[in-house]
Image (cartoon, rainbow, N blue to C red; front, side, top):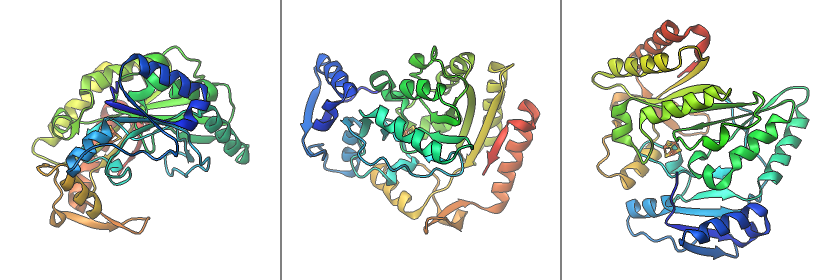
Length: 335
Ligand code: SF4
């Protein structure tokens, strides 16, 4: 669970019930509480890129989502559902490192109901098709869930609607307030996992693998659809043995449960590499361009993916092993 060092309230957030509740919760905790009239977040300290990053990651903002124009979220969903932005985790390879600025604070939106009502409008435009919304496109919303209840509100809201489905992904384990909800099979919860070596080396301030798997087991037991995102997959000494152990641990724990897998190999952009080197100067992330293949991306910038032979080896390995232990229908995609 996220324990912020400072909390900034946009004044507009205090017009909402959620904003008021959060203010009284944090006042009880005797934290450094600040207010922002304009919504601009200033005063987060830090001189070096690493300090600014750390102080940002220790800051919580309670604000209002002003723009209710949702981004699309292909291919896993139709739209992003903006409930929270940012994440307390400090994974070195994180895709958010290039998106959240130099002081990447975590923000809870207090106007959850307005956001959900907007989602329903979007879904109505697509009737009779079902519309899928992704709740973790720019965040990991779980570490702030004990404060925000945003996922709880969303899961219950979607539980009452036809033609709308909700999904999110997390590495965290604060799922207890989601276990007894009327989710009505409308929500899928995916857990992002990796080998112990990768978690220790690169996924700072995130839970251990067994804690993630136990949290996944609890939500599966509560009747949610559950999936695992194995990402990013790295090729290193002993990678096959360690990823096999991971799959076997899941198989033993989730004996009779239906599980889906998404597998994503490691990739990086030049810009992400520079950012990572600024924040984590002694990173051990493998980012040698000459050992990768350059691939043009759909947004105009290219990324470095594994070379064909390595990538095919990795794809075959996961395909064969997931089919062997979980069946063909368990694979969503491997890229
Ligand atoms: S947990 Fe996910 S969102 Fe958070 S820092 Fe790690 S990769 Fe990024």
